[in-house]
Image: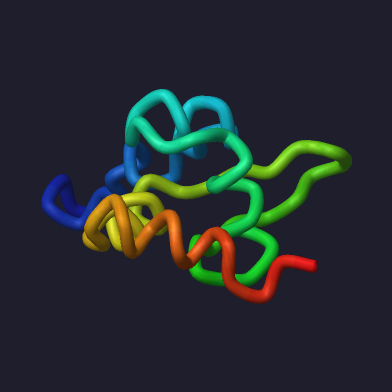
Length: 76
């Protein structure tokens, strides 16, 4: 593999729900709700949600109000 073809492993780093909440300034419950309803793509490993940087970047493209509403939609 040539040096220019190397994978950028920083893109594979994942964040916890708490890290996403801290970084974005939204409540932790909104992160969880958004993950559950699919507006924030993530994976649940055991009891913990994990999110890629790319997924978080796409999610924060929303305005804070849109993110809050997305977290409230489809939540029982």
